Amino acid sequence: IAKRHDNDDNDKNQSTTTTTTIPIFVASMHLEPFEQGSVARQEQLETLLSVGRSSATLARIIVGDTNMRDWEDDYAEHTLGWKDAWKEAGSDQEQRFSWNTKQHELTLAKSGNTQQPAIVVQNLYYGSKTRAYTNRYDRMYLEQERQNESSASMSASLEVSSFALIANQPLTNNQHFLSDHFGLWVDLTLSVTRP
Image 1: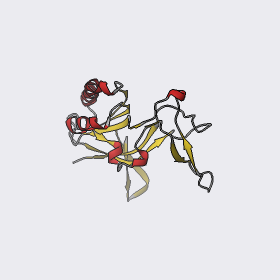
Image 2: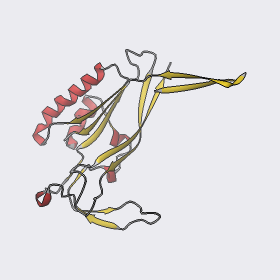
Image 3: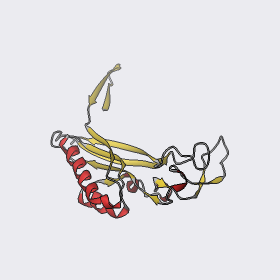
Image 4: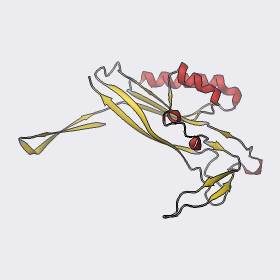
């Protein structure tokens, strides 16, 4: 919802508020797993795009466990036209892997004014038989309309301000994590303009 406040110079005690509803499509997803599921994932992404576009929205956001491999980026981004939020935020390699079951060093968040030393951690969510590797399974994709058919007088722009992994630190010991996947924290700005 966008609000505009107009103050009349002649009457400082009165203000006018104009409220405009901005339609946005947001969907969480969990796409087909495993490397051999790429064709099914393409079909699922096409379906999400079709449903989103049919919803008469100015902007569309899909987020979740895509199970995608890096070689599938081209289809999502160039064939379907989605913008990858991690790439839009600058592709920070420290924030890349939402799946990391390798043993690695991690610097914990500050405690008060002191920086905690790095510790060696390993996400063994599935126990000692957890296979050790990294991947960027979890993603956020964005699509926006420059001019929406149902709202021809408005256009939208979605900009990514920041992108970070969350829940990527152990809870009680160096192998106890909240989930096998880390979460995504993305700050977005939606700008709407009228001609």
